[in-house]
Length: 155
Image (cartoon, rainbow, N blue to C red; front, side, top):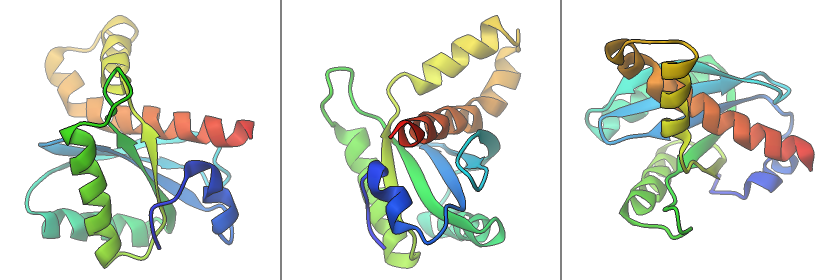
């Protein structure tokens, strides 16, 4: 497969199936999963990053075990809309995944997703800093995936 536009994702999949949302960080990878009908995104887990091959093995196991139809990667676009080094790194990660796994990948602008989740966890959930650190990445992945799902469902 290849990178695809999020709006075209539904048309290239034989059936909807679950999506895997990914919040790619330098130390961790936050994961979230959608239901098969693309209504709701739920936090799944956080992977502590290591070598790419090991990270890919973990991702591939999740893709297979959960019958994931496509990936939605958060794209860390700058506030002014430009793509900097973090975007380049995310796009390279996607290209590396595509060399090993046959799955469509779409991108979703993740601006402020982590900070929005941090505010939510502080104000609504009143979580300690340690507990927030444990859940923020998978919650950010769910935030990213839910935004993508909502955009697709509006079309």
